[in-house]
Each structure stands twice: as structure tokens, then as C-alpha cells.
Image 1 (tube, one colour):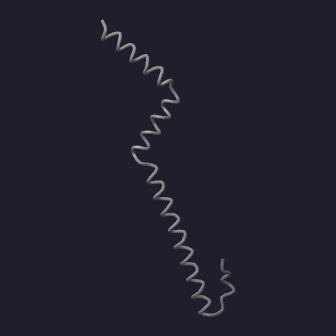
Image 2 (cartoon, rainbow, N blue to C red):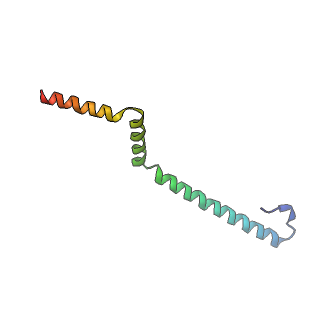
Length: 78
């Protein structure tokens, strides 16, 4: 980081400005990459998958599904 109080000449100022622009561009690229990563993760398909997965963990999904299949099977056999 530049201590701007130390800048005495126009060349030093120009150099400090270029370093600031380079630092800003580097941070901009990092933010763009993170944004692209987030967009890739939060797709509708992935959100639905995560929601179903969490719901299945919270309720005894498989036991209820088997109960439902058994109940339907019994009704169909009647």
C-alpha cells in the first residue's frame, strides 16, 4: 500500500495511480470469479436437490414412502 504523503513528483503519482488500478482490477476479477462460482452452485436444479435432501433428512421420508407404497398396494389388491 502506498503512503500518499510520500508522493512528491508527478511520476510517483502516476505510478501510484497505476498500482491502484492494477489492485482494483485484480479484486474485480476475483469478485467476478466468485460470482460465477455462486451462479454455478445456485441453479434451480441444485436448489431443488438440496431442498429435497434436507426435507428427507428432517422427516423419515423413506419410511413414509414405503408406508405409502404398501397402502396403495393394499388398496389396489382389494
